[in-house]
Figure (cartoon, rainbow, N blue to C red):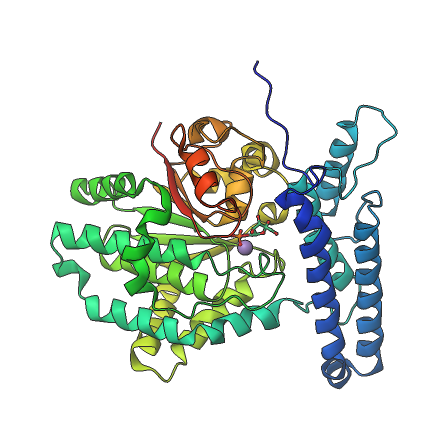
Length: 439
Ligand SMILES: O=P(O)(O)OC[C@H]1O[C@](O)(CO)[C@@H](O)[C@@H]1O
Ligand SMILES: [Mn+2]
């Protein structure tokens, strides 16, 4: 069997992985510590002295974590008793076994980047769950909410746009396709707005994204949206089955989530799908990722807007949830360090669930890294092969590029991009729609 390429790792001094572990992750930890500090009086009001003690404990655990990271200490077993603790510790054993009995231990600047980065977020969770009574505190909530409020204008413009489109049932075939493509692109560019790339600092959408789409076209490096249209319109025409289920594996809250909900709403109103299943995270993750709480919070806030078009969208979304046309799921697998090709073994129940979808949309960079096992594939390596057998259903990755990993490009395309823009892989300026169709 041909050998697999190595994992991205902070071992590669100067790489994006290296800079993330060296600079961005400590910065995120510092911000989390600062957030806890600033909530001290809130903890006191809620829980009295115990709340303040808990805040101190969480801060000391996070400071210890930051020190371990910055001094490249061995990665230790998790000490909490959460639902996934054993799976994590087992995985750590697996990482250790890969070192083949050498004296090496898994370490921050040595082990696979995907593993250490996920581990950091899991250790933040550990610090919080080990600090009752503030065990439910989300250290990233504040910045997620901020990014939503800062994007308010774009959200209003987007909601107005989609409200003025209706009713989608009267659309011609061309209009349907055109609108689907537009909303897919909005959801793609919504992925620029994640908070872990900016070290937790504000990263909201302030431009009119609808009017920017045309100008952004050249930045879509791979565009398989025609295949998505073909798949969904075939289902619609053939009335092939009474249920056309589209699953969206969500990424970030704030503006990106709104763009995903707008897309999901259109899939239903256009009858290209009959139900949408959303997948989010069980714990705060990579700063801005969606939890169930964020999902409900966003719908509630869109509903509560004083802008008529926006609140109408929110009311319709609330209704989709109530009527069971929109179903939110979470699963611990999404916050484990495993690549998705391991899903059938590690989370067979989730894999079986995903097999019921007609199409699965994977949003964002982290999902891409997990789909691709975070390995250094050649830029021209086929997407299907890099999935290493992961194929619960036809799937599409919708992602702006924020790490040094990209497959499926044309020969020479990467070299051209590199000559033109040396940072093309990591700034979120470029995007892809990469589809792996029915087998
Ligand atoms: O929100 P996304 O698109 O998954 O991005 C997560 C980000 O986190 C990183 O892992 C860096 O910390 C990048 O790969 C990516 O920029
Ligand atoms: Mn994210």
